[in-house]
Length: 168
Image (tube, rainbow, N blue to C red; front, side, top):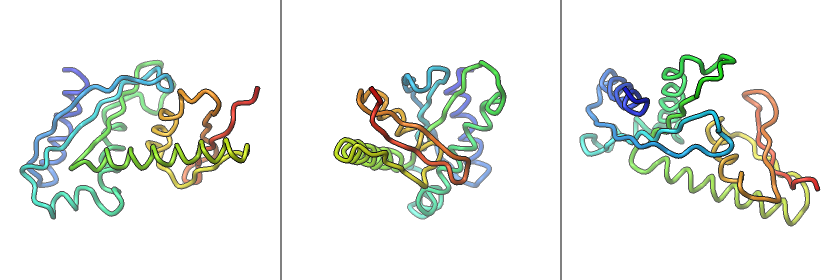
């Protein structure tokens, strides 16, 4: 079974165990240069069979529940996630009701503002309080910006992202 279908099956089963009736659609997302050794899948929970209260619970406060589901998917569906294996890592992005798309737009704005600040001040710009997934997305967003680079620094839960000018 293809990895995206495994992800769909896993998420539908988890939703069922949680008492939700919902279908899941998926699509493959092209890997970026940042993630040469990974595959990316977008899993979309179809909200048509869910009531608004159920959608709100699945999203959680500030996306906490859907972020946890996404983390569990990536962790559970990759046996080698924490090993030194050279096997591909599959990242699963879970969306519901456009939440993830809106969040990615906010991350894009955050990345654009960081680049603007770095170019104007010539100083590093530190972005704190991001999940590992959000840091990964900002790395991807800025990977093609020639004059800046991004670095994740520190240890969880105090890990942060630094945006800085590329040194000549």
